[in-house]
Image (tube, rainbow, N blue to C red; front, side):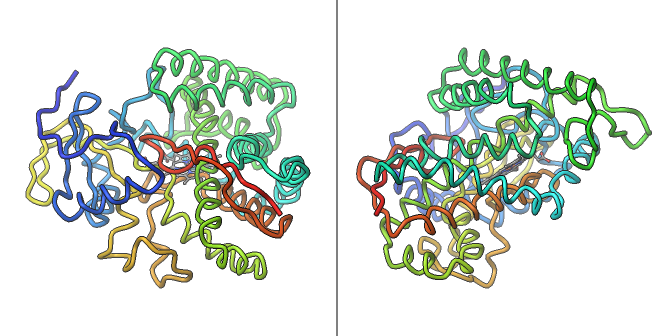
Length: 395
Ligand code: HEM
């Protein structure tokens, strides 16, 4: 294993609060925008918007196929599209993209709204609840299952194993990450077998679409890579919505006026969401590896060393977003935020994520007269950032 020699500019394992990482990142952007940490065998971190953005667009130099996240998590095989570089990654993206088209999102909306209301009601009946633990962590699995046409029989396993996997990732329990990841592969195998036996319309079903997709030479995609793709999407779309809805509820508990404004005028919610995605970017960053020596901001990084592109820091870069730590509706350049990444690996599930977040926020605000924090916020760790447990009191 490569041991990256370099200074210790920051410690990703230091204890954090909900707000503290942003102060650390502000200092790093000022003093040390290309930072190095010795944690996890050493890695570099780009903190500035400009450097992160440039690396994302130079995907022939900054590749994902060696390591796509810090700390390295993937012990159990290659999972397209995240683990492949273009052009190998392209057929998988083509197949996935079609399943997120606007008509399909529109068709999913009533079912997602119903799940949202069903999950919120028990919390409102009790007058309190944990918006991450009791609501969003379940909602994201239901939404995902709807999108995936997941058979009801597999849903309980996906719920329990998906949650155990997330827990193990959060607590750096490598053996448990491996064990639960293998169980997620078992679920993916069952979904593939089902769609081989009972194919659906490929425009409506991601597994059928992948089984019928062809690469640029006209060949069917290898089955182990289809398995990897299904396994990849089984978790990639579940963690981030849980974290960001929690963070948004913390913000709206602190800013009751904004809470009332959005409740009174739900048409503002889509724009507010984009600003929340910038402020509370739930994936702190994904990683790349430079396949040749690069010099960035005067720092030379040897070939083959992992580099975290810290989206959560880039999105608070004052040079791009003035008053970056404050919520500001309708920033003129809000479309430049990097919460979903950029370039060839930009989030495939963006339309579904936006739909889920919009409905969740519309219903949390619409079904309540007010809510406030009533306990300790628990937070996530690298490679996520934000809230994992947010106890709320509802009125
Ligand atoms: C708030 C919600 C979400 C956020 C913030 C988010 C964020 C991201 C980011 C930052 C990436 C880029 C990774 C990189 O740069 O290497 C990504 C990739 C991806 N996301 Fe999302 N995501 C969300 C929800 C979802 C959902 C709901 C799905 C699907 C059901 C999904 C599927 C994917 C896939 C398949 C990729 C890999 C794309 C590729 O490598 O070409 N995401 N996501």
